[in-house]
Image (tube, rainbow, N blue to C red; front, side, top):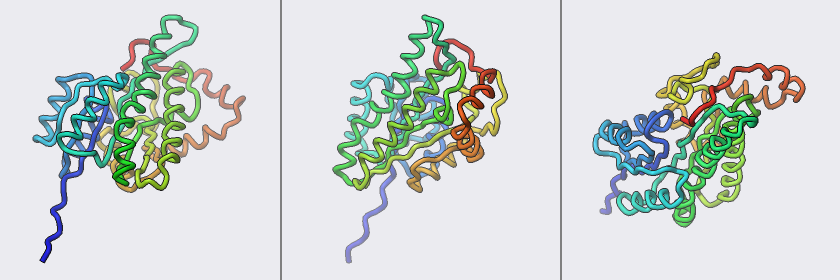
Length: 262
């Protein structure tokens, strides 16, 4: 009598794994039967996180803004463990920016290269193989900040608005292929990125709780999920506010400090 094949570990490739939401997702998935690919710029942080995973993780030191480096990391992961079941593009940077300062131009470029092109570089090596295999999930981390332009955060808001539209385009392109595209839009999550904010952050959520909810949305194949859900209501209201009302309400809103991207 033929025996059913033993279930294999899930294979998950995560960028931005050295801190924040990416690291929280790694720790969440490491509790299961998985093989992980951890991508980030900081080798020591990645190695420490891999050690927590008990031999389930491979480390790839790469900047998502470097397309060649991401292609190399993807090829190594596939060669050693196989095509991933889930690819999570979590790498991102945030910094306060003001267009009037010429020196902020470099920060604008870095944010767009990392948050937008970095996601393209993350997915590109896997799209054709997943389409051919007829399955897989591509997950992109957007943000509630992409719903409306926030003062002092022109680069970040623009990048996350672009990410939302990019993921929507990718989802439509892959419709019917068996490959799912999931957009996750966090609100305020307790990470190093939000730790520098000097203003109230409603519904601030611990990173481990956010990771659990995000993983649930990924497993369900949701198209777009806001975490926490209360921020989904806030985002919906902001999206419908007339421009004159929005402008008056947010002209004096709290702003992230200008400086180097996190």
